[in-house]
Image (tube, rainbow over all chains, first blue to last red; front, side, top):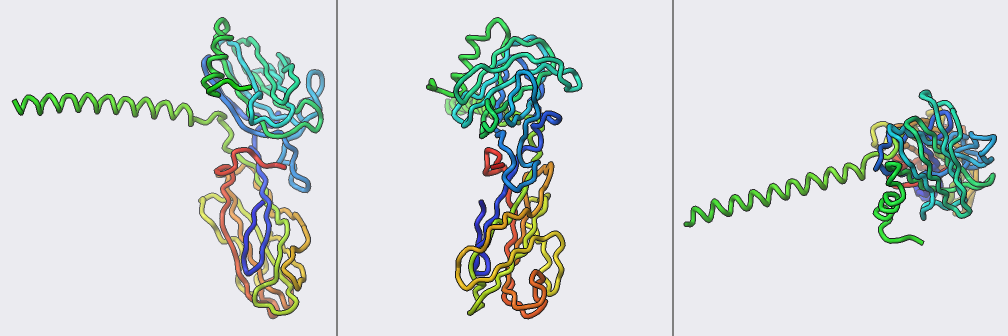
Amino acid sequence: MYHSQINNTRHELDFSWRYANGDRESPLNFGLLRTGDVRDHTNMNKSSPEGADASLGYQNSWSGDNFGEANDVTYQVRIDIDSEISLSTDNPSTDFSSQIHLINLDRNGKFMGYVKGSDSSGKGALVKANVRKGHYAIVVEGRSKGDMGDFKLIVIAVPVNDATAIFAQILKSYYGEKRK
Amino acid sequence: MNLLNVIKNFKMKNQRRKKTVLGILFLVIGMCGVLAAQVLNEKYYNMEARFVRAAGMISLEKGNSEPTYIATIANNTDLMPTRLLNAHANARQKEAVCYTFDTSTDDWGPIVNQSLGVISRSTTGSVDYDILSWEDDGGKRCVWNEGIDDNANREFGSLHLPIYLTVPRAG
């Protein structure tokens, strides 16, 4: 909310914004993710405010098997070598019950197959999966219809055989000390 | 002897300089990694501004006041505040929202939450806004000085959204 004063009067403006991309048809794009890379993005999956234009919020664009009815945000990533990737919203920036889906895409960004979904009960969600070279969509959505808020998605790729130790090391350096 | 010392000192200083330069170089490279865009196409924004409400009497009006506001926004392409409204007398304002109410107190007027416009796929993440207010004494209510209007004043500026908001605000 923006307050200001002119002419001995006050007025109140409200501003809303979102990243223009992040819908199923126009994902936010992490680009090429090489082993050892760590990427993150802070975003939200909220609907547009009451009375505001629909383009100011996200909607439920993935439905059917494996997906819920909550608003979702879609990211895209390209992997150039067989890797183990970790996708996580389990951090203090995430303030709603979230889940993550990993989806295999074709070269043109069209759905090829469902890879894996998160299995968690708290606000944060985690997916770890061995993936082949290719294009993938990462979908962050609420666990139940109406679950929405802010989140931080962290994406890590590591060589398949070294995954567990490297994930731990990267997360430790990312957050510093141990988190609860 | 002195000359040798000078040469030795110069060499040592040069080595230190090299180390410092290398250190700065590594720091810069490291910072580039940290500051590099995490998402390639995040620099496009959908934005909307809405006029919510206004309050108070226009300062020159002694009795009942009819404060009138017109406001508009535009995509900010030069990152500088821009005048968007025509403040000349009798000027019709295209695509500006008009807000009016009658009051004899400094209380808030009604909430209208009216859209000033939607900007899709902005590349600057910045909105220009311009608001003009006056006290209306007759004539066309939303047209400045078509009648006997008082005390027009304005505010104009820019709002650079993602600079100070780290999380999108859609609710």
